[in-house]
Image 1: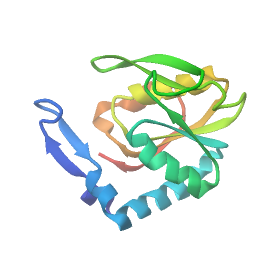
Image 2: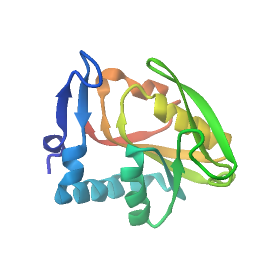
Image 3: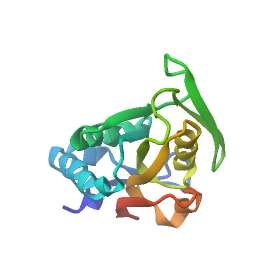
Length: 170
């Protein structure tokens, strides 16, 4: 299946000159979505993780069903103030500023292997933040899996040498 055919290009979103790669058509097609999760399970299972962690919101879309398929736990990584228990947080750089991510302090145990999942590797800021968060909690990032890697933005330069894979490159 050609996943690119299920990703819509939206010019000038969120601002003039940007092309947004919209995964909504892929999610709305049951066969394409199921194929995506199956391919992620096949390709990303080589990372030998104890848990999957993913950032809200689109990382959840792929991370949770992938954790279920692989029979491992899922760790939600959220924006500050969204988790009800004690958290560990990191601040990270974005293309146009800073952002923060949080997770429960007991979500990742010392030396636990964690596979990070996200929909798109663009500038690498969110992935870099997730890496820092898992390491700050004492976990080990075994790898990162993406649906799409936007190669022209060179986000892999921010992955601190962590191995990553993708299903599609643009």
